[in-house]
Length: 236
Image (cartoon, rainbow, N blue to C red):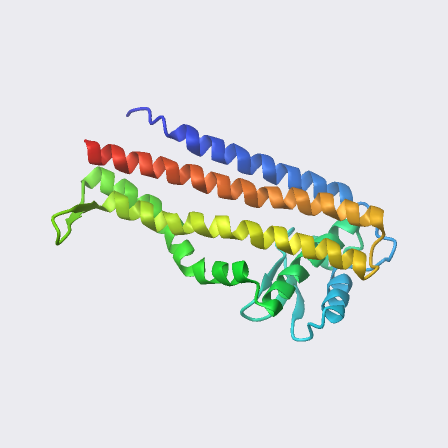
């Protein structure tokens, strides 16, 4: 066995993701104890936001789990988790509004959301096959001769495949930040929360945004690692 110095990149990425996850969980727990003055549940808040935004073709469903909330643009369904659907907290309303922000993006044809949707198949393949292809390419030394006389290794192919997973994470950032911005604006403009409550929601959604930043950073670090490994193999 030998020490691979590139593992430090993986460790850094893991630490970032763990720290971000811990931050969002602790922030959500804090503000999930703050009951909104309106007394609305997350589901009721989502229903009202969609109605006031002129979105009448999106269903709201209850889904199991904590913070598993998401908007499904394919079926036009907004799914709210156990900790959001029936909760009357400021945190729950903020998360529900964030998902409504995605529904509004879909309605308006928000470009980054469209790009992210197109990247889903390639990103899924990249996240599953990128690393195995690089490892196989390094171990077996498999490559392909190009018609022009060049050479393309399996490890290099793995890097390019994994690149789409990284690209997906990067494109996700503006999508999530924009959805949070829309959510805070709608909660204020529609008079659903007071200014202090909107600020509480901002803290919750800001902490949640860090998880996407950490995921993107972790993916970029992994890509750098794979590039280093594939190039080292080519030099050898």
